[in-house]
Image (cartoon, rainbow, N blue to C red; front, side):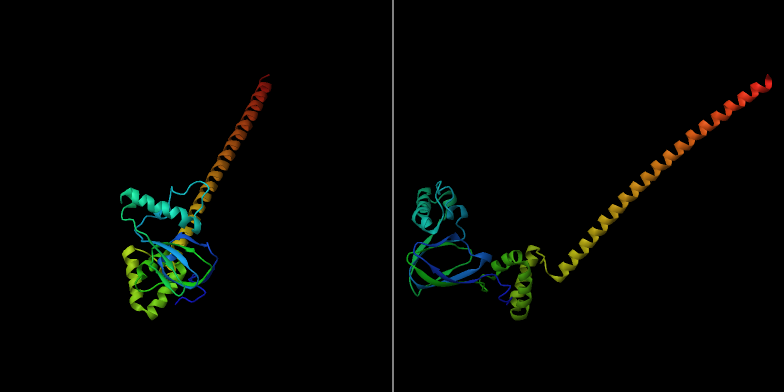
Length: 255
């Protein structure tokens, strides 16, 4: 709906050698995905959304000098995670632990629900295709992520939804109202921000002018005091001079 140019990357043609893959992750913007394998074999592991990130990533289970590349994750880190989950007795961060492992063969398609952690290892050289997407099923989650992660695209998307899928556009607005969310590129919001910025500039300008006015007044006051003091000293010296001259003339007249 928003056009290919503005739409974020969402479709890939995948070619991978044996032992390559992707480390554990969640797909962006709460999208779901499908992955079809054309050639080869892939090993998958999926974790439901309720499994903590620290568990999925194997925090504190990765030893110094180790990495989290797909091959190492599947051969070393994942077994440690499952072993800790068993030893925990389902307590602490391993409560309700779940993971799903399987092998994908040529011609098979895997569905990855939104919010599910997953990792993939190519057991052979592989060729496949995958695509992320938004449907009515995961629309709420995708909208909430997109309105903050892709602000400009989200507003354009909302306008297109109003034309093609008005019930989804209304749902998006309902979610915005529920969360008190204001879209950055909404015309009313743009105008509101323009007025706020104009008011801020006016206040800064007035504050600057007030400061400059006070500085001028202080300068004028200092100049006046200095000038008045100078005139007073000059008058005192002038009066003293004539007073001395008057006494001198008086003494001469008396003699």
